[in-house]
Amino acid sequence: MNGCLLELSSRHSFHSGEIAEVAFCVRQLSLRVQGIIRQAHSDQAVGVQFTLVPERIKRALLELIEELAEIVQAQAGNPAHAA
Image (cartoon, rainbow, N blue to C red; front, side, top):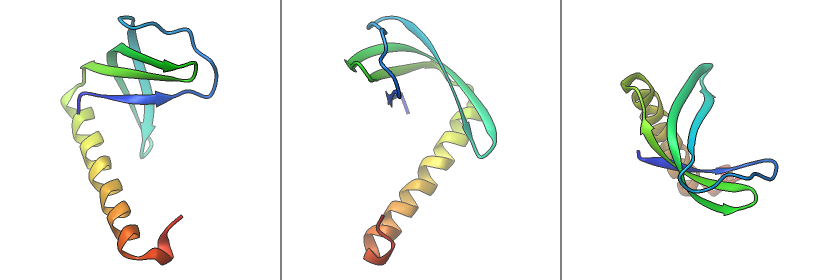
């Protein structure tokens, strides 16, 4: 888990190389990570490389990713659940 692509709800003026702090909630747990803007894909998307992710946050994110992967696999195996 090295980073993410963020799709923003409004236009941005971020530039590659800028330091960023990303905060979000997972299961009512506030998470905050530090990173660097690596790509400004468009006016509404940026690629962020994580530079500092505490172990507690890594565990929470990995658990979430595993759960989401299970949901996607279950939906792929059962077309009735497809959104």
